[in-house]
Image 1 (cartoon, rainbow, N blue to C red):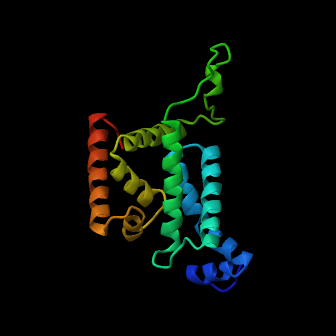
Image 2: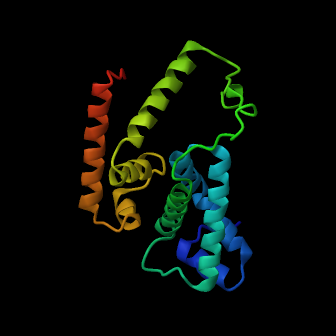
Length: 193
């Protein structure tokens, strides 16, 4: 790791000429945003870790092969890689759960999550969070993507526009409609917030 703050561009240049510390610095700079984005999409820690590692492996390979161009920013580029890996995963899975074929092997207790502390506030917060996530899943993909990138990955609308290959006004519009549709869904379900 470097004590002096270097730009992404400088770190990439150093990595390309063989400085492994440069890539470690660059990746640690964005790991939280990338992981949170992936986790918000797949909602499974183990799977998010796998896709997170695949994202950085693909980014490192891309840098070594010269697939990264300086016209974009590194964060947008790596978020696009993460987004594509998530989409590939969902295409392969077709979003259907896998249960054991033999019903004797299936135990409903295996899929239940048990909290050690069951305070009412924690339960209420979790229910609200789950409800909001389920409503987000009902949004059109373009709106859902912008909402997740903005809320979970904490990206600017300019960054979101670059990742989604749109302009800022389109990204802002999608966010606006996502919020409108989310509020409508919550009102239809009498969601209390």
